[in-house]
Length: 71
Image (tube, rainbow, N blue to C red; front, side, top):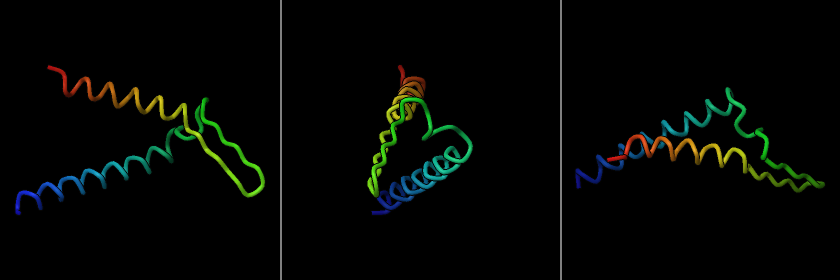
């Protein structure tokens, strides 16, 4: 049981740090307002499709995963 508790605490800490990073990037960088991000608004309906941001984030995470987990 102690092992599971430690794993949950580490995962919670990593989730907290990731959330903090997302908040900081949102204030500093152009994320969320990149070319390829679509925002449609009609009346009281709004739809946001962050395609450009998703592609850039996927590319960055793939590169990090490749660098850390290659053999």
